[in-house]
Image 1: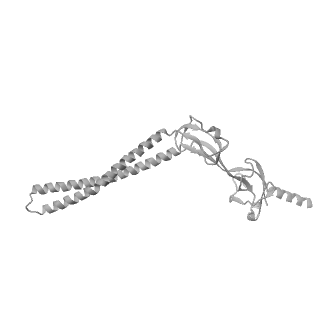
Image 2: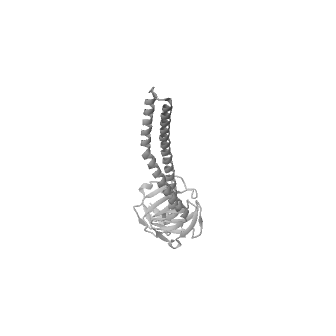
Image 3: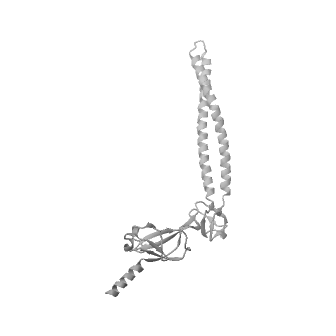
Length: 261
């Protein structure tokens, strides 16, 4: 009975040991959201932490469209400013023509022909005013549409330049001369600012987990689990996935021993 007890204790201790690989905090697959020919790809940057452009997709046509859109907006804006400047004058003219017609229409001594001419002038001034007001609304809509087009072009152009900021470029999937399409993988990058350990805990280890300590390579740490899945893992059906986030103290991709006790 004594030997049986020793064996059980030994097995329990072993069950709390986990060996896992030190992984980057996150791994991203950068995919293209636009179409175009790859005009530049920095293959030499693979295996480095990068703070620069790594891929350039052809954007010449987009640049020309953007320039034309900006010029068109400026011309349309000038037309709008002229129309807005003349509108108050046309409104005032219409008011005067209307007043003049109303005054003449009540005058007995004024001929019918004169009254008709005055009425025509009033209608003409009103039409000019309404037409200019409608033109202003149309120009405003045009400028709004052009602004939307400019934003779309700028967004498209920005997406044709793939830049990394303090990320590790693990692999480039494209080179100069390739053609990018939406959803096509362009690069695989890692966030090495912190590291991640993933282990699978048993039900027994989950009991009073908040009161237990995490040991790495045999040394007690102040670390806590950043995430513990509430459902058993699909692959390890009797275990629960758990993650530990830590500073990149250990070399990435190396195996470390993790204990929970």
